[in-house]
Image (tube, rainbow, N blue to C red):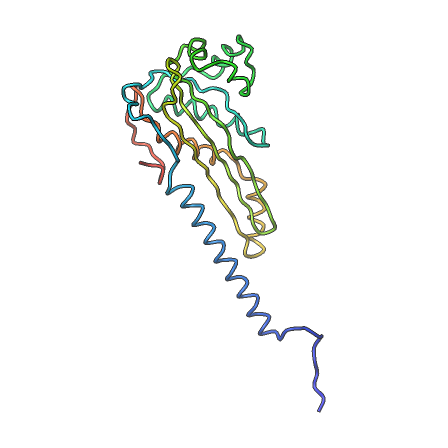
Length: 234
């Protein structure tokens, strides 16, 4: 009796369909796991930080946001971080000179970029800028990854506040925000590609700054506000 055989190695349609469905479920499971992990790291955990025990006795009245160091290959991060930091310092109740004013004073000392800031000690910077403390910061991650159906965007920052009288580090924090997209079909794969190519870094930088400076004790001019953002609330 002759039987018709398909091409060597071909699977029956029902087995092939089961394989495709199993593959979709595995991808979906991995995607849910990645999303949960990113939520836990980026939101629920908050920023890593430390503050001197006697901060209240050493609370500065004024803080200058220095040029931001860039530890990544991207050239965009530093320019986005600094205005947000300066704004947040003011919201926390500290006097904060404008960025352009700070840069003009630094140029008088031949400091034209963030990498040159350490040519002056915190005490010298305090005299030049007339502030009680200086805020150093660095962009630690500023990247996008795209691999077929997977895309991720990551932004990280590190911040430390130094007293300009004693040179003591009063506070420091670091935080990273990451979001991932996983395409499970043609449309979601297109959405993933759009996320990788068109997504703005601005919201990620805002979350990093918000989460990090949330751990900085309030300044002497702080005025409570009703505004807040989700899991970034203390």
